[in-house]
Length: 123
Image (cartoon, rainbow, N blue to C red):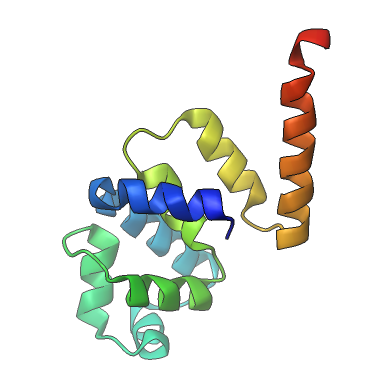
């Protein structure tokens, strides 16, 4: 995770839409054909807690979020960034596109964006 993403998470952590986060967790769990019970066992939490998280009726700790992301093969940025107040549709699309990229690919993307931004008036 890049420093800018970490900073973004810190700024918006209190305005996270946990219902949206829960929907993402549920969708990814189902995509991987994992039951709530299996996910709970892998994350060492109760199945009812997973249910609450997926419905957005309980907030999850950062430790639980990290465990869920590890098991579900997603990044914290994917889970939280477009669920934060103030995020834009463009940011959501970029985050989604980058969610499966390596750190090196993300760095190359950032370098490319910087070159484009510096030359936007010439394009």
